[in-house]
Amino acid sequence: MSRAAVVILFAALTFASVAAVGFGVATDGSRDGTPPAHALRLPGTLLDGEYTLSEDVSDRLRGVPDTTMVGGQYTSGSGAEARSLVFLGGYGRFDDPQATLAGFRAGLADRDEVVLVRGREIIPAGYGEPVTCEVVGNSQGSTPYVVPYCVWVDDDTLGVVTESSSASIEASPDSIDLEEFAALTARVREETRVPAGAARPTNAPASDPAGAAALPAPDPHR
Image 1 (cartoon, rainbow, N blue to C red):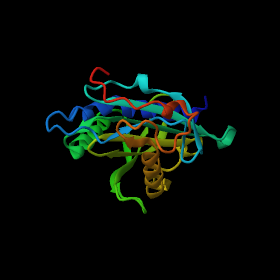
Image 2 (spheres, rainbow, N blue to C red):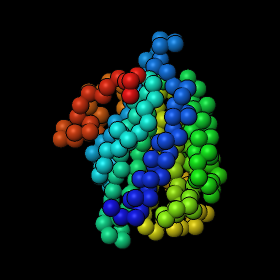
Image 3 (cartoon, one colour):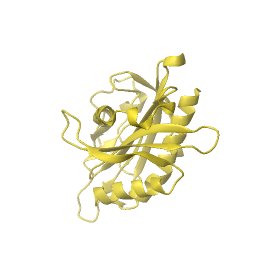
């Protein structure tokens, strides 16, 4: 696994470890009788086939009552052109999406990551829903890095996307185009968020093991 892949996976799992702070306000919808409208899937490819799933890390994500968590590392290219993208998230019911987002970001702030470009809400062109993006870094240990991430939260799902390459993890934080990365995240959201209980996501081929099975209801014991 390349250094970029190791770094991006480490960063993403760090995000996952603090996601429980935000997920703590999730419920299964029983308070008002409204079931979740959406779930998340882990497709075999992302961004119209540009990235291929290389590792399913769902079982390494911290479980939260009434929330099902999913996550995967995706790769594209090889050698000096290799890139890594990690998608992770959870679905259930979020009584207050803004509080969930604030909880996630507060949890991240308690870690060793330093915010290098402060987060802001972006509505990518052509999409009606916002994502919140920022650039974080970690100068501690043997693998310092610079990584952009975007996160979205709605009534049913929370998703985090990070992307990196050998060049980008050493890039100047101000050189990272958050508008462009927000648009990429919106595309990932379109490809991973599906109607709850969908028999097969619309863009998953029958041979795609990650999308062919019926999506489970949120598991309160995960």
